[in-house]
Length: 396
Image 1 (cartoon, rainbow, N blue to C red):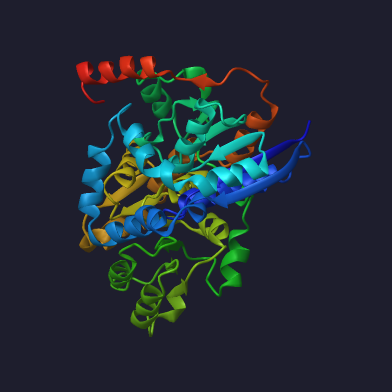
Image 2: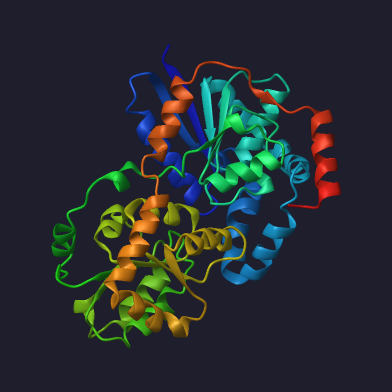
């Protein structure tokens, strides 16, 4: 029987939405899928709830990143965080519940913990008969992702699975799939053609400076540092949706336009990453997954405390990145990479070993083809036992 698939994201940053889009793209190519609906769950809540998740996150990222990192660590309490979150989310989620009821899905995939918690609650209360897959979009499993009813968790790395099993989640339902990214990142790129298309020199290395889809990045300061270096490389600067940043960068490269190309939001990231020698970027979950799929060495800039710091740890431990703690060191760190092709090659191989360019297709295969079996339903009594374990053993 062909399946109806609902994919729920949340526009908190762009990574959750992009992961959902990647899943929808591969699902729509499957002959055993009848219909796919990919939707932003925050479009089905009230304005205040939407602003609490989306607008507040963006403002804190830009203005109070230290607080955001503190809150990330403080709220990472396994088997405690989920109850408080549902108190906030459930009263606002009636339109979302109605959407689910109207669509009548066989399978639901959630790329953000807010809809995952709501769907899990519906299943646990016997109000919904559908299989639930929770798709974690960073390289660290935070307690906010815990749900009490589910069929699968899809995570980025083996350490996530080990950590989740220690928290009491059943290991046979945790799949180390990688983060779902656009299938274009699995395709071969003609580097020369990409560079020529944008008027760049294929004989020179290309540095990709990514400001992120929201433009929350020290890209302007980074460009000032790059302008001080010998012009034996060229730079593509992607400013995302930050028009002010794009204007600033365009202004400071006047006279050096031959060495720089400046873009706002673009759909060419798969090509740019395939043509680049080094990526300079904040280590968001999606950007990190895309760079690993391309085997692209990273120079990490200004990670936000919390999930971005954890993503950076993964890259640094694997030898796939260098970290720039001060903007004044950008030139030094980049020069080290550009002048040492052996180091770049080693970092590229390390990155590629972690990359999972076909994660979206693998997740789709599992949720559509896996045989029926009982859902995981973690009882209140079991939650009490797991909470007691956390209290006695200390927060992990």
